[in-house]
Length: 547
Image (cartoon, rainbow, N blue to C red; front, top):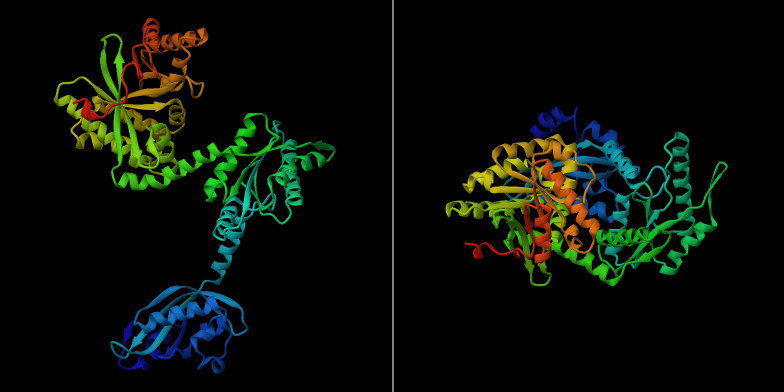
């Protein structure tokens, strides 16, 4: 706001100085226009004779929403406050144009306006360009169907209106294995013609393409009609040039509001149902069982409550021992994060960590676990106990931040020697780390600081041993899935024996997890395992039970 004793100074020195660059107009204290510059006349198509004396409300469309914007502008300046924002205004002929508007009250006194100065920049071309970009974002250019972004917007609007509908996720079972240019052209035609089949069968239903061969239909029709698409597709083969393609699809159905209540949950349920169909051969469209919907709902509830649980410090860490066979003693404790919720019950790391990764809380969760582990490891050192603490980590922690620096900082803060800490990484983690030099560097930095690395879930991930050469791995943990059938399947025994021998040939220390009885422990000892972990050795315990 501006205070002047002579308003004529405003119109002569200030407004004329801004004329060259801004749209400018001036109103009295009642909102009636008393002055405009040529830029305003040009964009608004008004003439000086016609516009003087008009109110600012007449510069906006008569539609209710636009008049509310005019009210908001005027309410702001009548309170002796500047208004600044993007608004839609109207030309004399009724065409819309967009400006970034600054409205400045000129004060006569502390409570009274003398007049109001309006300065604006024409942003119509920018707004139109944004609308074009939004249109591109809303459409799949190959098929003309909605994009995933538009689907989410549309579905959220339908949910808000409490419309009843089914979210149908469809995936083409047909896959092109040829990589020639000719076959690539066929694939594009096939996708386009398949989209036409969808539009013909699900008439007037919103349809989106959400992946290369994945589509989503929102329809109010019953399951029997949705499943009838399979027969329709069978009777309507796709012809490209001289070739005929008989396509089949796998699909899943999730209903709103009976099954799920949010966009993410509906899509997750329909996708999971589709994956179930694919696992048994495809060419079906099914719904999930009640138990499966309960699992999805539980996952959503965990994600929703995790933020509050972290803030309220409801999470805690338990520690499961590892038993060194040669020394016949405990040498390491694995840190396992836990969360007990009054409604959800006990939530284990297997359930919690993937959700933390999806929701972006894995870094905060990891920092909490590392801190707790460092505090306990420091206590072990002070009491001359030989134990180390093993921590599970996620590749996302290394991608989202400087994990190495974070770990070192925590260890320094807690006065914990790095040699007391081990970090477990999975085979999938190791595979990705090979492709990301920044991750490999962080692992090497931590190794140099004194941290030891263990390869977890050995034998269950990618079938490459290259990372055993390139990454600083000192220990290997054979997955419990092998332990479960160790006593009953001779092939499993040979696999475990071979893995132990391979690891020993590379000077790697071998831990076997999931050991639940004496027979398994004795057999693993005879096969050369260095350490075992599982309920036979000890269940997870809180730190108070160890000290």
